[in-house]
Amino acid sequence: MAELTYDTLTTDNSHYASERARLENKVILDELERKKKARSMAVPTDDNRVKTRLREIGEPITLFGERAADRRDRLIYVLSQINAARGDDAIHVDEESSSDSDEEEEEFYSPGSLELLEARRRIAEYSLPRAQKRVAQQRLDSRMPLGRIVDIRKRVFNEVKKFANLGSQIGDERPISQVRFAPNNEILATGSWSGTVKLWNVPACTPIRSLRGHEDRVGGVAWHPQATLTQEKGLVNLATGAGEGNVNLWSLESDSPISVMKGHQDRVCRVAFHPSGNYVASASFDTTWRLWDVNTSKELLLQEGHSKEVYCVDFQTDGALVASGGLDAIGRVWDLRTGRTAMVLDGHVQSIFSIGFSPNGYQIATGAGDDTIRIWDMRSLKSLYTIPAHLSNVSDVRFFYANDLFFKPVLSPSPNDVDMDDADADKSNDTPPKDTATTLLEEWKYRSGLFFASAGYDGFVKLWSADDWQLLRTLSTDAGKVMSVDISSDGNLIASGTYNRNFQLFAPEDV
Image (cartoon, rainbow, N blue to C red; front, side, top):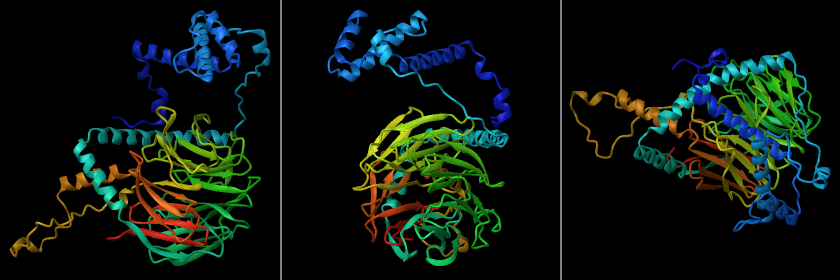
């Protein structure tokens, strides 16, 4: 299969080749247009008038088990179908209802800069091949035998259930608001309400450096995707956001920021790096989230859309989408290539404090003040599952992202193996055969996104399976509120930051 790029996408018309495909597209577009018109249709809210209108158009006035709201939705659906069949622009239900209805809201667009246009094109060029590769891998996984999938789940979940407290360290003089592992899993960054960001060696928990550049509490900490791996220490390796409204970019060679990006009018709660490392997103109490260019330190996009403060933001692994969650209890998924809303996450009854994309690219987890975690599926545009996760606010949600750099194809010796004293006994058995190594690599790729961690204000870190959403392990901390949680990309460490100024490390008992 040829690599999918922006240029081939814009010139490839093969998906319009067949008449059947054109007809299917037309049906979909007609249905979307019908739903759009139905939303703007003036329909009575009084149940008796709804029944009267249903009787007038020859429909049953009620169905078994139907509530008043369901009945009104049915009236809207029937009227929209009649409208589509007649080809009319609108159906006038009655003059009184039409006069009481609000004016139809029209879409509006804000002018964007040429830099934003170029950024959208680059994001499209970056995300399309990654999405193609991800979908191809998912097709391979879908052909994996069921028995093998069950074996992988058992092994992974048995390892997850072995996590226990490895140690605790006082991290600052004020609460630790965010903890994040570096891509090499050897450094932990902590942000605190004192305005200080600290780097720690893990698992030794010895301090490396304190980064001072914020004047208020630090809310967001994010590592460059290639930091501590291929990114030079003198370049941007870390981004942070704080209460004074600034987003700072840091290197690993200085205690002061190499760039300060100003623009937010209120507190910055969370920051996130785009998978390409060229952009940073920040969520703020000024009801916006913004996209920044790392290379120029300029603001590319100021995105409105939430009615209250925006608290969290996260990028999809392909880099095409970004999700934001706010104190209005609404989450939104945005397409960075077009600027449009791809999905609205409407279901929580209290503020959303955390949001995270699954490595599979189409599922999203949100944690909120209603003590629940909701799982959303972008394919069906709805909530899949609601987890009653904690006894108090869900402050952070993090999926396990497996990094292939830390894949170690080492076979465990079988208990039935017998040592032989022949000439071949001195040969190393650490490297498995090629076929076995390929099998182990496939299993390693499959385990990415197979579980996730959540932190709550009930003082617990909990580990969940990401296919049937069941609780695997509950880890207690030495604090009443856990502010943040993160999982290392090799799967061997979990870190949590707490309100009582500590951070904890958790590891499997046999590590």
